[in-house]
Image (tube, rainbow, N blue to C red):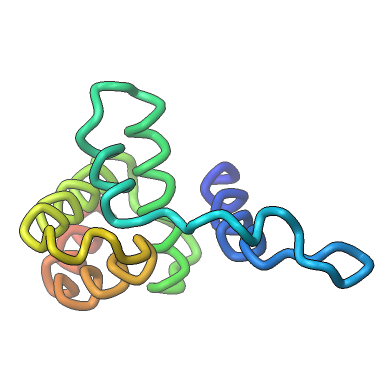
Length: 121
């Protein structure tokens, strides 16, 4: 839980951070995680890539739904699978920012996600 909270904080604060002198930090030049980046990590055989993707998805999910507690791990993995399917079905938009794509997916899949999260309580 703490890891996800720190990850969300890094997402929200990281890009656009300025130095004390008010000059943009070098991090301003970095491109946000794209839908393609997220799909690549979800499809990877590397556990660290899968963990990154799950943390990213659940960070955006938690912020978007304003839930105090995230669902249990099996439910999180089901949510990640829904996201993966949606990204694979909409490949022409994968160059867009992952966080915006996730919000659209969460809104579109709201009934399905609510059924998942209510059954995990």
